[in-house]
Every structure is written in C-alpha cells, then in structure tokens.
Length: 365
Image (tube, rainbow, N blue to C red):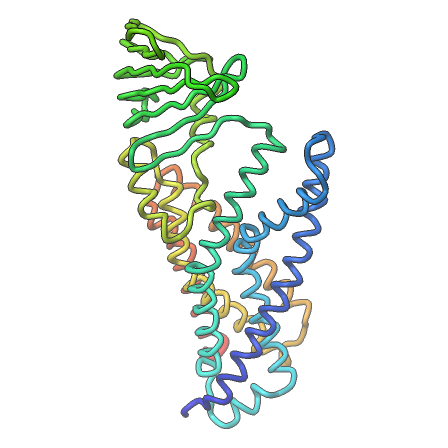
C-alpha cells in the first residue's frame, strides 16, 4: 500500500528532533570533559588562560562531534521507533497495510541527508576549527616551534635554531625510503627575522640531530657566493616528528582532500591515511543508513518482547562492536595490508548487510 506523505513527514520529523536533542546533550557533556582535561594539561603552562582553554575546547568540538554522529543516529532512531511503537502509532500503521520498510524510508532518507550534510558542510567547517585548535595546542601546550607544509611547489619546513635563528627549508621532493630532500633551498633569518643567508643544495639528508646539505652554495648579503662540500644545520627534528607534523586528515576539508592527496603523493610522501579518511567520508551516508536498520531491528518489536534495558544494551553493544571492527580494519588500511578503498568501505558494507539481514529476519522471517 502507498505510504502517506503526512505519515512519512511525521516520522522523519520525529527522528530529526530526537537526533538534534541527543546530539546537543552529548556535545555539552563532551565540552565539559574537554575543558577539564585541557585545564589539567594547562596547569603547568603559565601563558594559557581559562578563556583560551574554553576556546580550544570549542574548537576541538567539531572533530569529536563528527566521530559520535553514527552513535547519535543509532540511538535517535532507536528512541524514535521505540516511542512510536509504545504509543501504538506504528501498530496502527501496520494495521492499514504499511510495512516496516515503508515507514523506515523517511528515517533512512533523513539519515542519508544528515550524512551528506555532515560530509559536505560540517566537515569543511570542522576542518578549519580543528586546524586552529592544533595550532593553539602546539603553541601553548606542546611548545612546538617547527611546522611542516606541503604544497604544489614542494615541501616547506620551518624550524628554530640556535640564538633564535629561523630556517625555512624548501625541497622539490622527498625520497620516502631514505628521507633525502632534493633541490633544497634554505633561507636563514636571525631572531629579529632579518635575512642572513640563502643556501642552495641539490640534496640534503636528515641525520642524527642535523641536516646535511651536500655540494651547497651559500649566498650572504654583500658577499660572494661560497661553496661547501657539506653544510650542516642543527635540528631537533627526526623523521617521525616531521611525518607527524603533516596536516592530519581531520584538518583538511572534504573538498580539498583529493588535491592534497595528489600533492602528497607527487612530493614523495605516503598518503594512505588521507586516502582512507576521504573514502571513509564518502561511505558515511550509507553507514548512517545501516545504523537506522540496526535501530529498527532492536526497537520495532519492543512491546511484544519487552525490555527497554535490552534495547539500550543492544544498541551499546552494536555501537561498540562496529567501532572496534572499523578501527581494526582501518589499521590494516593505513598500513596498506589491504587496499584502502576496501578498508574504508568494508565496515559500512558489513554493517549495511547485517542490518538488512536482521530486519528481514525479524519482520519477514
């Protein structure tokens, strides 16, 4: 039988309402916990105020909020179906010939639209906030003075040196196995950011506590160029620190990720983590739909089988299992043990198939 548009709008509106309320409640709790944690970390840092702590907690909120979206979808759908079933509204709908799949459609559509909105709008905005949070964290909590950037023109690295000197290092490419920079240009400035020298070298290697530039040409103001077989710049960086300094996938907009991935790969650095993040974002609307199917399987028959606690426990266990499964599979994807697209889409595909199977068993089996 044809499902009434009025009924579909009513069910969809109920789901969106409970999704919004639950999301706001959880975000409020997360902000409070983040403020407490940041206050603990800032206790020994004299240069950070309470206002800055609150600002950092709010800037970090979009990142954590995006991580809890699947669980909010799951519990909002469970509560929506539980409430409609307890009030016998779905019983009446079934009595007039509307199947479970028909009154599930508005919730599935709403979940998919929330997923699209989250990926295309919330993610780009959240990336800006998270990038700002990481800048503040590095400056005020971690006390880092080195940053790394990769662009279409190659790799840019800034690091502090002795007596407050600053070095800006540019390289066209990086050999990932040996971490050797090619076509290197170094700009040296003093503590007052006055230009001191430019060093050009075809190659540079990161050794223990130093950069070694081979066949270097040093150009200083008002001096003739000076050649050196080896020119050394002291550094506190190591390979792991530099690779960790790359922009995390969460700090890059969904729309900018493909270009950034291409830049990383052309520069010589691995981009598996960023490709996995991008594919996972593409899969999220379907993941949200699978959460709705699981919620329906737990809550549609609640009056006959009883037990609100059983419904809540089932949702918690389902969310935990899916989270662990997704984390394990993504670990294999980041190490490229399995193909990145498979690692990104497998949790969603498994969840969707299990949700459909569970609902078919309960409703039609």
